[in-house]
Image (tube, helix red, strand yellow):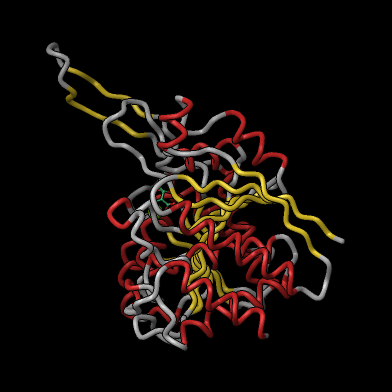
Length: 346
Ligand code: IPM
Ligand code: MG
């Protein structure tokens, strides 16, 4: 028997609603697997709820649970706008565990809002850039802020490891082109370094073409001709923006999944937020979280289970078993029930 210790961080809003569905699906996969698999779950507090309960959105015990797990599945968190020094715990987790890869696949799905022939994998640097948190302000004699600065920190080390990761992914998956997205014509030092490192890394992959693209052009090309992209690698904020944009090519945030991957651990999460406007209404689309669980299964080496889950999700979508955001009329649990039924039949 192979046991997997999973840390589950439901979070706020619809986070617990979609996470609960993922756990049901994981249990079904374990039950129906040809191998003997057991998933053990350890739940942790995170987000605004944790802050209200324990005074900290990212408690020490939660860090310990993530650290000792084989992988973590994260729901969503609410970030209250008016609490000074409050920082989103997902950013804290990425930094604390040095989860330098933010993996965001955008793949065609069987739904009218998804374009065909899209298979783009975005690798977003996840630890630095404009997310450095190195910020300061100047104030005038009345204490009014007159100037604000955020340092955009790009290091050779972090650029190299994310770019290498993207090229390795391309090599493993027989992909012939990696698009490196930057703005080195203006951000000469920061993007300039990212670009130079990319050129160096690309030297080790003679069979893979390295294409360079300025970020504004990339944003436009993603809408004009998205089929041209296979692997995109870019810095933190550019990746944040481009991945939300790219998700709209294949059905939107209700289906966008992601992985935060480091050397020691990995955290998988739907790209969407905690959606307080629909919390408690049984409307949340569980698919983004189920696809994130699929990425987690791949990461754990459970490729058969990952493929089974992806196929079941697609089949349920083809049969129009959907939540209202995708034009269906099923509840969160009903969508999952159908996916579970398909898994049991397959
Ligand atoms: C994402 C989110 C986060 C980010 C927010 C919640 C801090 O937008 O995961 O893309 O900016 O990285
Ligand atoms: Mg984002």
